[in-house]
Image (tube, rainbow, N blue to C red; front, side, top):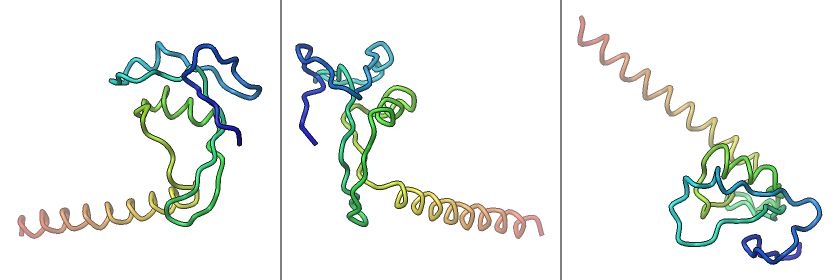
Length: 108
């Protein structure tokens, strides 16, 4: 994958890129430049080492819809993110069940 400066206003967006909407990126508190467009990026998962493409569309969603920080980037593959989400849901349930049990014991 060719490295492209997505913040350079003088570069013509490559084929397959997705234009950025600066009005929607206003939530970012940064002194650095905002991207003019998004391009597909290769991500190597920090957990399992799997290579995965973070598509331009996914980046636009992350930065503009989910309001992710413009300085953040994907570091995990979909499978590892899904595994983490499941692990956190189980931990949350155990925690909430414990709180409910304590409340029940207080009433008796």
